[in-house]
Length: 272
Image (tube, rainbow, N blue to C red; front, side):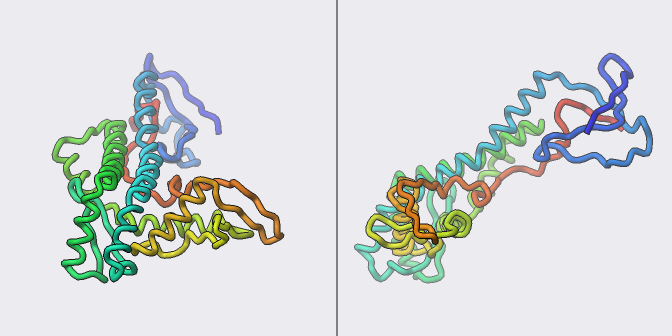
């Protein structure tokens, strides 16, 4: 699509048609023009536009950072789940979830008693690596939100930042996130064959990881996929060794946490 702009002053132009190249930051203009001079636009300082674009790109990087944080959460959680299975086998198959809560970890469960929840929550909060990884996930989500707001020209106030932080605590539970990541990988990345672990068992990322025992099986498969220690056997009988798959870098599953944006274009300031 072409752009036709005629001069109307030193910093203004008459717009007849505008090409929009970035659907994430712009909205389309109706194709039917009712007037050859529909709007007047002023060209914005290119350096200011570049700075805004850089901020938007930083914000869009947040889900990738959160994917890395989710991997770190899973890695840190493994030792605690092994301890739970060993110390409290009665809780090995009890379903639960946990999320960030004001800098610590909070558990929810319909299978456990209040005392069991308290015990497990103490175990998780006693894992400093786990708490730090959960906090990093939360902080990267908040940072992406704030970067986008600043790029929009509406930086967050302190009270707004506090509200966004609380909202980030409610993004969802990590066990549920692991389940979604695993199911998505199982559905879209494991077609036309099966992955086998080094011990000969079949890799199954689609299983339920929302209990201590279930999570350990999930973690074993996820780590084998990432490290390339599994083998892929196709339906035709061919075997591929050493293939790697990172299930945590999946921005279709990692929550996108951004403010509602009024930005419709970059590089122009438009008036009717």
